[in-house]
Amino acid sequence: MNSQFDNLKTEKKERIINAALKEFAQSGYEKASTNGIIKEAGIAKGSLFNYFNNKKELYLFLLDYVTKIIDEIYSKADWNETDFFKRMSQIGCIKFEIYKKYPQAFDFMKRAVSEGATEVRTEIEALIKNLISTGLERGYQNIDFSKFRTDLDLEKVTKIINWTALGFAEEQRDKVNSFQDVTADVLDEWEELSNILKRCFYKQEYCGDD
Amino acid sequence: MNSQFDNLKTEKKERIINAALKEFAQSGYEKASTNGIIKEAGIAKGSLFNYFNNKKELYLFLLDYVTKIIDEIYSKADWNETDFFKRMSQIGCIKFEIYKKYPQAFDFMKRAVSEGATEVRTEIEALIKNLISTGLERGYQNIDFSKFRTDLDLEKVTKIINWTALGFAEEQRDKVNSFQDVTADVLDEWEELSNILKRCFYKQEYCGDD
DNA sequence: CTCTCAAATGACCACTCTGGTCAAGTATTA
DNA sequence: TAATACTTGACCAGAGTGGTCATTTGAGAG
Image 1 (cartoon, rainbow over the protein chains, first blue to last red):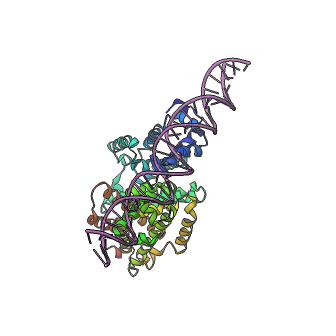
Image 2: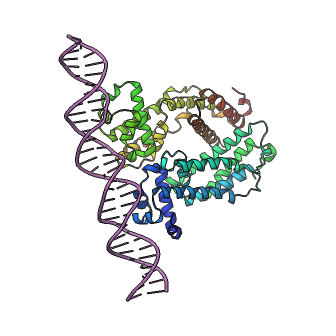
Image 3: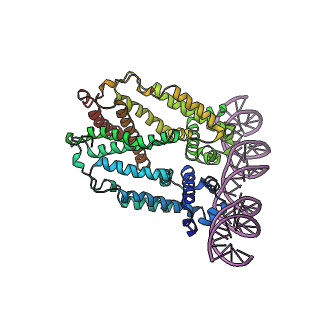
């Protein structure tokens, strides 16, 4: 990336980033079209190739950029919060903020891990290896698991909660895309879901609604 | 579709179908390449265009084909089974059989509903409208919901169970892709998960492990 | 063994789209 | 006004597109 890109107005920069994320997420590296990107971003071909020397550089920039954004989740969260569900909604909120700013960021990453193009695969694999080594359980740091019932397999229970969160997130996303923004209600609805889960998976003395 | 295609050996037919499903699922209608399909299927260009007059016809054939396969789920399931979890594993098993035969069938359909290509969009929209009108709750027919606890919102509880099933399915899929086939253990593992869910969501008298 | 004929092949076509360049044009600054 | 910085889109060679069709193949019949 050229320093010119960094000096762009934030609005324009994000328009370009989002256009590129969308194209790569939808089409994969090889079939993604730079023409598609400039059209969506509303800039000229020449501009794009002033900011980035070539397609590969653009892709690797995005890979790095999104990685950093996702890493920020861990610096923004409050690691003193020991309650599993409060931690989850915290991280959920941070992710939602990311989604509002870069709607295709997570899709881009998801597509990246199954990217086949040899031109960028080694870089992606390095990134994945790095992610795994820094630990997949970062998000569970300092959680008080003693609140959970002991008669249920803890690992499976946390999986169920995670899948619920994932499914809920996707449902909200479909809603937002087809109707209007509903930001306010989302939290309430998640609260209701997590109350059910708490009542089922926490020991009785921890089931109080907050 | 030409009758020639129907008269092909099953093995070859499925090879072509799977190759095409994969290409369309990964790339969408417009960016899907017929060259990619014939390469993956191991047939000549001319053959493909003997079986199907053009790309659009091939795509619409697949759309119809997969729709019929998915519809078969409903004819194969035992609708006298009233237990929610037994019904779920039944349908899960049927879907797994489909997945083994046509690994990209569900991805193809998922991509189809967000397909933008004008050449095929009207057909897809008709199909979606049809799906919605035949009812989304077909799968819940004849289920005995009285087994569920009455102090929890039933709609939310069934959502949680569905999201769990979805998440579990995806997890298994990742496993199969990266390691070896593990068909046998899958059912056991699902059994353990659904036992947890039963114990949490069913009235006490129905929690017995089958 | 030859003849027949349907099925399979891949070289070939016109055309579109690709990633990338660069001379000319427009803003911005001093 | 002049100098500088940024933006533009026409343009390029080459790759890839959906689709065709004359030729080759091979199984079965006589």
